[in-house]
Structure formats: C-alpha cells, structure tokens
Image (tube, rainbow over all chains, first blue to last red; front, side, top):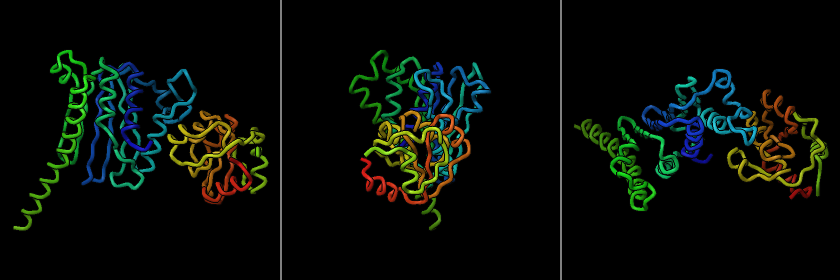
Length: 195
Length: 113
C-alpha cells in the first residue's frame, strides 16, 4: 500500500470484524529516535493461540468469502522492509494489539498519508464504536476521543458537511501543531546554546 | 500470441522453481510491479507477473488474481515456504537473472500483450 494510513484502515477493519466496540489507534512519530510506530488496540473477540501463530501467513484469514487475507501479511512486509517488525498480541475474549514498528528515516517507509480522511471514514462508518486516536510527535501529543465529540454534537451526525469539514481540519491542524510545537522547542534549545 | 509457462521458460532458459504441475498454464498478458497491494488491484487474470518479491505473499496475490505464473527477476531466491505453497496452489514460478525491465522487453518481443 502506498500509504501507511491505508494499512491502518485495513487493520482496523479486522478489529471491526472482531466485534470490538472500543478501538484505540496510535501513531507515534519519533524522528529524534528514528522510530515510527502504529498501534491498534481493540477489545474485540481476540485471536486464538493457534491462529495467532499463523496470522502473518496470507493463507490465514477470518474471511469466508475468499481463502486469502493479506492485511497483516502486507503490513508485516512493509515493517520488515523498513528495518522494523510487526508484533501481534491477543487474548481470546479480551482483545488484540497490533504494533507496527519501522525506522522513521527508512527510504522504503511509505508516508503516513491522509490520516484525517482515513479516521473520519472509520468514525462515520462505525458509529457504535468508540475510537480513540492518539498522535505523538517526539514529545508532543494529541488525543482525540470520538465519543467526546459525539457528545458535544448531541445527535448531529458527523456526516453533516460543516461538521465533517470541521473534523478533518481539526485533526489536520492538531497534527500540524504537534510538529510546530516541536520545532519551536528546537529553536529555543538552539538559541540557548548560542548564549 | 498465447504461450504456455513451459514454452516461456524454455525459450529464455528461465528456471522453473515451483508449481511444476501447472506449467501448461497459458499466458494471456503481462504485469510488472513490486507493491503487492497495487498488483492485487491492477493485475489481470492469466497474466505473467514480473516482480523482485520472493516471499509467500506473492503466492497469495497470484492465487487471488488467478495468474498464470510469476517471474522473479534479478536472480532473487524464492523463500522455501513460498515454494511449498506455490506447489500446493499450482502457481508456477520462474526465476530469471535479468532485470524486470529486460524481462518485460523479452515478453513484449515475443508478442505477449
């Protein structure tokens, strides 16, 4: 997949199919440590120990329409290609945690892509699921709890054009802000050094 | 021009490294690409797929699309589990030392669309 947000969408669909009603999505960008991490944590039905061992194999799938499932295998490839790894932990009846780790600076690492539209696609499609999105850039953090936003909206659907546009901007602005704040701190440090 | 995988392999001296049972598959067209998600979406049935990827996921993609064969270029070696799976799934895999560009050129030269 050309963008990591597409991988993310794919993995979250697994959580949805696994009947999760709470899904935490985290994106960690730590250029200072050359680390990129994507974590999806759900409270779905989980994966049995036997299946967990073969889950990176494309011929393992929870689908019934076809025999091949490539969501996790493709993400696994992308991680290994970028000097990282894919970790999957799961307990039946409790949930699953998928952790994709990559070198931040790896030349083959796809860009994160349009994360705001990806998230909104999920929020809009699954209105019974409580999504929590966390984005970290070095030491700066942005957290969005979709249930809080739903409460404020008080029944107005996320698909209302103004609300939808506001939400996209809200996500994009906050992520941009993380990077700005980080850069501002860098400027302060470097000007301190000049004294 | 429609060629079988067997004819193609012998024509260019490309080694058949898996899926020998299905070497009489006919090749109707070609596709080249290394990003599996794109191949999955764009490649056509009964094609010969040229790629540098050599792990088990290529067998899954080929099965899904219904490809006639995979041609691994640049001399990359097929993973053992991929070889076993390709035998099970009857997906012929050829290995070639030439570049993907060169492989495409040869396929085009002999008239594969």
